[in-house]
Image (tube, rainbow, N blue to C red; front, top):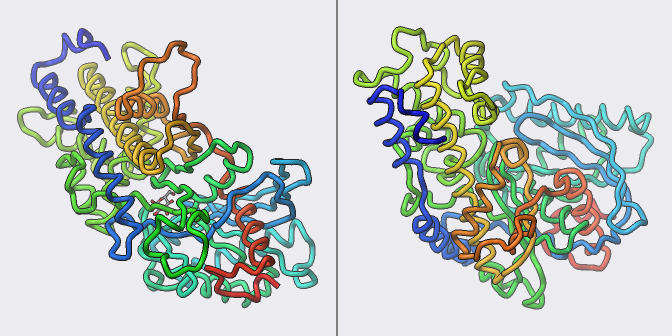
Length: 482
Ligand code: GLC
């Protein structure tokens, strides 16, 4: 926003905007500092001692060729919906057919009882199979790739141990336990004819699905309710897997769980609002990076700022108005900020309507300008910090050029997220100015293929393939592959 438009704003609001700009702007030098630390943390996470980023091996040990075939089920337990897909990888290179159903994930389930969660999921799967395959009990078991997008270790001793819930989930009795037998028991109780072939993370699915159609894709990212990435490492660079007897150049997809970056608070420019978000979250001290970037938190950061500016005696925005709706935690999601950033009108009339209808507040024009600038600052900071992670993986792997497949509501729907991230990558990696505005960047973050559908099916296919070839690393239930 041009400075001039603030000319009529009361002095105290101008000062507040300046202050927020100082808090939320991440300059090039800081981006570089964060990226350097990130590279070290990625490496540390691969060692036996480990670091704050888990760097979970996924046991996806090959890249797709585009020639995978077969029919698979894919289940995605995301933040808002449960999605079930039947994916057919066709004979034609890189092609697939997909049918899918979505089921709403009841809000109470996210903080309820583990048993109810698994029962609900099993019910949805049963419904899907009955609709698309007729009488379930007469069928051979269908291979399923389950996208479970939380930090879960996957190795041959303890496949599927949930390290901790993220993204606002808080279901007792699951953390520290293996989710696979819980899920399988719920299926068995109903006689659902499914064999769980692969438990996958959404980022790994995104990486593999994108590489299936575009071999230049080297990194898969999710910028959605949560924020995370996966990439292919080679065994030779993973000291914590030194005892697995494979050639050092064998690939292994790593689910970074980079949301945990800087949990020690060494480099990220946290503001008092970030500190408050963390303090009041179900898991304080965890997911420091994610809490500054992911969709779940962007609206909440914004809400905390506005409440603070209302409560400050010398600022007191929305003076004399009832802000009780605004006081309710997590009432605003990132689509609220998107709508503010998309308001095309000089007088921000759409933002005014949004505040009136959703929050029962009528901001003055200077207040609307502060609101718009605050949304821009939060959205820009998120995009710029995200770029540090992408730059760090690229530097670690020595990728000078590649494609990065990205998915998630923030990437797909938040205005300017892609352009702001690209600008930050340019600053971090010191790229010269583009000769032609239509040229691709050396490292281009672009829309990914469907990771939790096609990606999950592909990973099921790749896993079956290698098990048939006798490569059993990471396989817990051999009977699921017979
Ligand atoms: C959270 C989860 C992670 C997931 C990401 C994106 O960070 O911990 O597993 O990949 O959100 O959904």
